[in-house]
View (tube, helix red, strand yellow):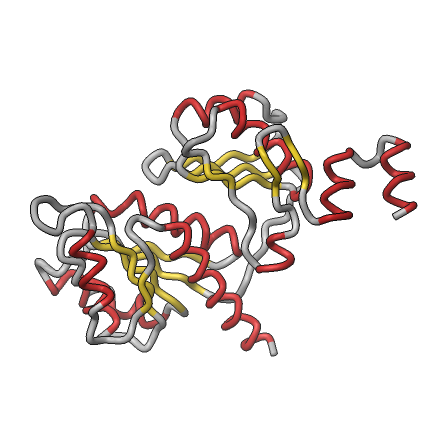
Length: 252
């Protein structure tokens, strides 16, 4: 502790960094940032922009960069993105996925993690791309290689069959689908890869807004896990954890 206090006194360590090292989180006006989450859980802390002002998101992103070397922001609109990027150092690395509404910022000296595992992120249709993109961002943040397989819904089974080699080679798959949500069940019946179903709020009328897709995945007759509607964050994080465990087994 004395070393940390001395570093703060000398200016080598900011108060936020010191707090994060001592208690595992840093306190800001916008809330507490869990700087120790990746070390504790294997998943980096993310800032949910939805419901926060642009200034609050920018403050949290600054603290994330200061304490962990990167900021991972989800559900960000244009105002959030502008507020975060306006205050960044010129040599920071920025990856903004407008459709997925994710914003990933790396400090210049940040060394991204890498693991020897692949996550396939699959969409039934283009309408599923936003939730799938969020899942891909999380899996990539954990360090997995991400393979995208897009627009392979069950309206033409030949489309998914054409990508079976890719899916079978992956260590885990996230499969996003709206409407009746059949694609994850089909994929899970064709591969020995763990499959995570991601229901998407695409669809209309009775059972629309993802409700039929969620119910279908929960009632799947093939073995798969299912997250909540549009919850790309949890799907990607869970896929990343499975990928890390597989990579650890390989290394062992």
